[in-house]
Amino acid sequence: MKKLSVIIPTFNEEAYLKNALLSVSFADEIIVIDSLSTDKTIEIAQAFGCKVINRKFDNFSNQKNHALQYATGEWILFIDGDERITYKLKQEILEAMDSGKHAGYKLNFPHFYMNRFLYHHSDNVTRLVLREKCRFEGSVHEKLIVEGSIGKLKNPVLHFTYKGLMHYISKKDSYAWFQAEQLLNKGKKATYFHLAFKPFYRFFSSYILRAGFMDGIPGLAVASINAYGVFSRYVKLILLQKGIK
Image (cartoon, rainbow, N blue to C red):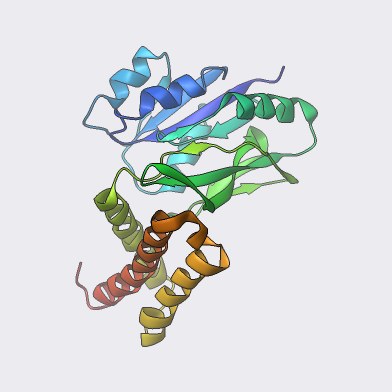
């Protein structure tokens, strides 16, 4: 059997971390890369026997690339503190590692909001990779670069995406600042097109093209807040251009 290292980035995840750790207890090692939490996150990780690394957060890619240096497994599984690996997905992960067919695998993440999983608001994200074949790029929605072919696993990850309405909105605002800074560094400027059309298209894509309407009221709420996130990004870009933050 090939060795598996799990990497979990954390910041104040005491309410969720224990269950995440239990769900990946089959791994050969678990590395928690913590952004200087002020709650009991580190205490929980240490009690579980994790390898804990403390690092001040600068961006998502640097955080995960730093953790990769401490991993010893041939395979790496990246999860967040609010995600859970089911028994069926565990079996699929172990089989994929042994098969040698691909250098990495995408996992499916249906969003969880208003006490239900939104199967029409789901993402397929590369999270299981050969350690020697991967690196992260990008500061906000970091991209995992894999040298080799990518497969896809069938069973979903349980992702308790949003802890409530205000958490969801604040998360979008936080990402919007990072994204606005990226656009500013690239010399981009916000226009009425960005402020009006792009949020509308994000709503249309989320609610209509991806069939978010099939997820009921939670689907409508997610599509609306996604559109707000895009609008917020370009408003923040205008503020940065004016030297205001």
